[in-house]
Length: 235
Image (cartoon, rainbow, N blue to C red; front, side):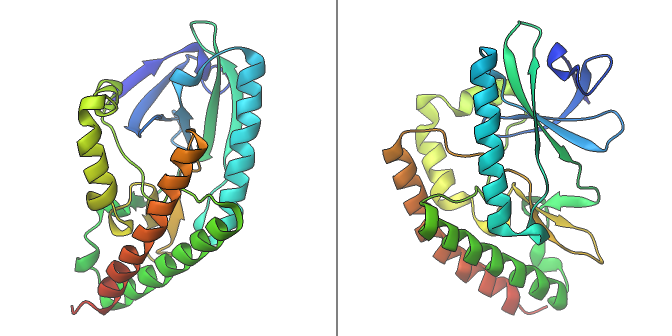
């Protein structure tokens, strides 16, 4: 267990200390003491209050759009709070309900599930792909259904260095697919629901976003084939 202390957690925790239990490409993920909520923080985005407030509003708008894209069956609510950290910078913290008894698709041996379970999961993944592609045609954007993990801020900084660019491209094109998603969780039986937990946007140039989403569009067709194989795999 890694405990992180910072005044930024004051709105949520009396002693300003939360357990870090996960991390992504840009985000540190913490859990409240009662285990009811997940708290996400991008500390490198801290700054003046006005900028943090505008960012919180933009992030909330994007999250609402992505949640509407996938529908209530495959999304969870996100709440945005602006809080000042221990260095005096205003930060945006994202609060979400903790999805208990669920695990990322990455950690689940889907092939070992029963045929009816695989069918239910495959049906949901096809619907998620359909909704994401429709949203892309309408807006030129889409939610990140894949995700990337980091065990610490040190590892994340290392992965984001120029020297790791070939690895990141290889991971983006080959290693990451919908069946090995970090951002999609599968809840336990009897619900067995696929839920997206990350609603971040791509904060890069317009050209970068165009190429990124276009590549994702092509990779979705690969994922369709993988989902088909999952559904028709023999027990």
